[in-house]
Image (tube, rainbow, N blue to C red; front, side, top):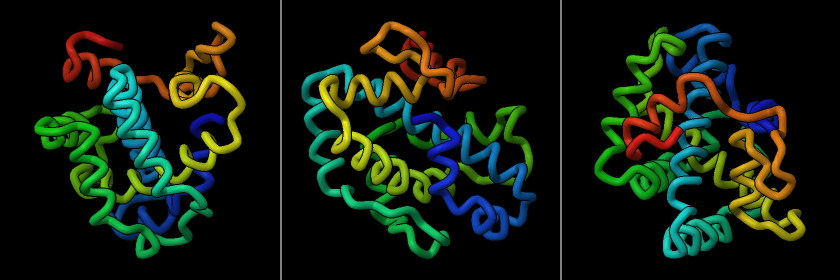
Length: 174
């Protein structure tokens, strides 16, 4: 799975309309926001306690079939996910994304991340159910560009300015 597979399940055109931006700006924002959420999940999954909490959350989001509009997304649930992933730094994460040169264009990540979070959790839940072996770490590693099970790159990683954002927030990890 790569970022393009995730983008197919996100209502990018609806997000563009909601935020009053072009589909290209919305697509880039979804890419950056999704990458940041996945990076935060990967960081949380490094601890046994965090991994268990993520697995439990994934069980609640299984069976997700995609969202055709922003109205299909439980944004209150998304807010809880974002708070859990980033904790007290959630505002800082949104602000850094808002200031990113790649995503300059009128998207408020404080409002976008709670839309993306349930979609991404649903996608990961479905992916983890179909996964044989490695579990959450391998799925997140593959999405972030470093397939941990084979030691290679999946080719569809979520990179760019993400390393700078997450590195600053999580103590230099890129």
